[in-house]
Every structure is written in structure tokens, then in C-alpha cells.
Image (cartoon, rainbow, N blue to C red):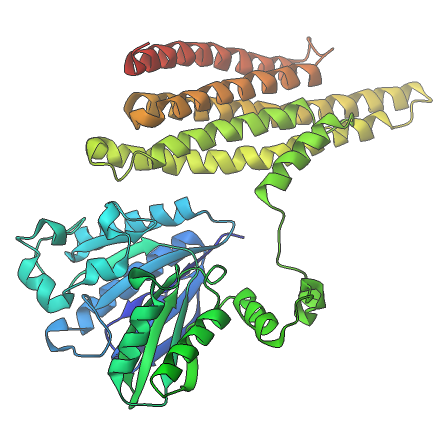
Amino acid sequence: MKIVECIPNFSEGRRPEVIKAIIDAVAAVDGVRILDHSSDVDHNRTVLTFVGDPKAVEEGAYACIAKAAELIDLNTHHGEHPRMGATDVVPFVPISDVTMADCIEMARRLGKRVAGELNIPVYFYEDAAIRKDRVNLEDIRRGEYEGIKETIATDPYKEPDLGPKELGPAGATVIGARQPLIAYNIFLNTDDVSIAQKIARRTRHSNGGFRFVKGIGLLVDGLAQVSMNLTDYRRSPLAQVTEFVRREAQRYGVGIHHTEIIGLVPQRAMINACKWYMQIDGLQDEQILENQVFGSQSSDSAEENIYGFIDEVAAGTPAPGGGSSAAYAGALGAALTLMNARLTVGKKRYVDVENEVFEVIEQAEPLRQALTEGIEKDAKSYDGVVEAMRLPKGTEEEIAARDEAILKASLVAAQVPLQTARDCLAALKLAKRMCEIGNENAISDAAAGAHMAKAGFMAAGLNVRINLLGYDDNKDAQALKAEWDDMAKEVNALMDAMTAIVHERMGI
């Protein structure tokens, strides 16, 4: 199941009716599930968390940005938290069966729509950043709404990635893709905000602190607060960060009053904190009750999947075999095409072809998924033939029925590798196009994708033919073989053209 998380932050935490209208705009989108929302009066900020399939989440993100632009005026907004837009920041996070590349593409599409339809300046950050100096949100937001409003038209650094070079009442929106983070606040038992600011400087990475911690000091609810984002809780864990802040606070004669987590937190982060504080070094995932009841959420690594498939092919069993390997090769061809395409978008040198490259990505990704699914489909496609061959053959009637069942099953079995061949041809066309217009530094990858797609096509063709052996007089079997023959001519022409293009662009 494809699941993406979106955690937009809005510059409003004091007007319940405005917050409700924004949340309702997201809730109205089919396929979106709202998980959490949190508002802070002092920060004057609301954080919303929702999940769903990529298309629904992208639509939900646009809906809330549009609604916030209607209802929030940054000219009258004041709060403790830095901000530059009504919808200040919109990150997409891959959760299940979705890659970071998918989230980057969602961010880019959403950014174009927000800039084009809402006339709001857009900046891209984190993994979706177009400029290296805009990876960190705090760098983009420096100066906040008031400062950026004065300099956006004249300062090249403040020029938005998309949209107008001026700020309206809705300000600008930062859109990106990132891994899960934890919004974590530690309150101190003092109202001296300077202590929180000093501790934040010692804690955050930009001043030599934890590599994956960003932090500021604020005054919230009458208490000094160290407000942090943990961008990688595995390498900058909650427990260690908390103890560092505790020790730093003791230097100033204060302690921790309480802590809070804004929004949602990965279960693993809490388990890690529990293990650290309670010193349960030997705690295993299997000892967690919920993991036993609902099933472990862990999955095999990509490396295990790769070697597992190769081992299965080499095992000497009937399946997986050539047909599954054909789909595997085709999937790699589509993946290499996607690699080149994703290394092309966002590069100024290729801005003229960016829209076409996005179209290539939108076509290649479903092909990659279909070919990946074809690995398993082909392994099962011969089951029907095996079952038909087991039918009784004691009488002439049984022999005739058995032969007819084998023919029908063989035609079905041949359709699976034929579909693989069709998908490989489509992947080859896209690979050839990326060899023409894609990032020259990765042209060898696009060319490799073309060769992998051809290999998948040729291997699939062998499986089409072997499934149809002995049926030369059958019109259905002949039609399947004829289709593959026609496609083969196109494949050869495409490969010749692709090779000439690559040689010219590489100067060989």
C-alpha cells in the first residue's frame, strides 16, 4: 500500500475557526486520513499531520495551502516561531512503498501548482532542494516574512525557485521532501529565555552540536523552551539529546520542567529511548506485545531481496526462471531511466526540457512497478500448464480435453512474458529519449537502461516462444508470436538510434 505523510505548518495557532477551516479543506479530499493536529498560542502556529496515497496527499496539500492563503494575513501575524508564509512549510515523507524520489516529484509538482495557480512564491528544501544553499529550512526562512518581503525582488539569494518575486499577505511557502523527524520541545524551570537560547546553540548542529538536531530558544507559557527538530532520530537519539540539554541546564542552575513532542513520533524512537533509560540492552522487537499481535513492521533489506532472487533463480527449480529474469531486467532498465531523469530535473542546464522529463518520470515509474510485479507473475504463470498436464489421459475424450486445457493454459502463460516484452519496449523508448535530452553526466546510465530493457525484451520473447512450441497451426499462438516479431523490429531500430545518440553526446 502506497502511503505518504504530509506535515504542513501554518502560521495560525490562536483562531480556532481558521484552524478548523484549514483542516476541513484537507479532510474533504478522498483518500486522505488526518492523524493529528497541534496548535500553540505562543508560537501562533499549527502543525497538521495527514497520510494517504500520493495523489490524494498531494491534492490535500494544495487544498490546505489555498485555504490558508485565503484566511491568514502575514502582515498582522505575530508569534514566537519564525515564519515566512501562511502555509510556512510543507514536507512530504515516504512511509510505505514510496521512495524519496516519489516525494521529491510530489514536492516539485505541488510547487509549480502553488506558484502558478495561487501566485505564491515557492522555495524547495531538504531532499527536494534545487539549490545547495537551500537544503536547510532555517537558511531559506532567515529574515522571516518582513525581511524577505523587502529583499525578494533585489537579493538573488532570496529569489524564489518558482513564482513571483514579491510577497503578498500569504507570504511564501517552502515545500520539500525529507525523512521522518521529531519535533521535540524541552521546557526549563525558568523564564530566562537567554538560557534556552544558549543551550539551543550548544545543541544544534550549525553551532557544533548534534549532527541531526536543529534548535532555537523561545519563551512559551512563561517558561524558557529549547525547541528542536531531530531530523534523524537514529543518529541523534531522543534520550541522548535530552540528557545533553539536562546537563547544560545544570550549568545555569536550572533543570528540565517537562518535555513535549509535537505531532507524531516513530515507535522506534520511543523504544530506543526506553532501552537507553532503562538499560534494557537485550530488548528484542519480538518482545514488544504489539509486534507479536499485529506482526512485525520490519522488512527485508533491498540487498536481501536482490540476493534472495538470484539464489532462487540459481536453485534449479522450475521457477523463477527466464521469464522472471526478463521482467527483472526490464525493471532495472526502467529504474536506470528514472535515475537519469531524476538527475536531470532541477538542473538549470536542462530547464528547457524539464516538463518533458517529468512526463518521462510519470510514464517510467508505472512501468518499473509493472515489471517488478511481473517477476512474481511470471513465476506463477506456468502453474496452469502444470495443472493441465496432470489431467487424466486414459481415454480419447480425456486426452482431447487434456490437450485443449494445455493449449489454453499455454496461451495464458505466453501472455505474461509478452506483456513483459511490451513493457520493456515502452521502457526502451523512454531510455532512448533520456539519452537524447537527459543529464549528460548520467547518459551512460540511461544507455545502460536501454540495454537492460532490450535484454528483458529478448528474454521475454524466448519465453513467449517456448510456451507456444507445437502450436504453429493455432491462429492465437501465431498472433502472439507475430506481435513479438513486429516489436522486435522496432526494438532493433531504437537501439541503433540510441547508440548513435550516445556516441555523439559522449564523443566516442
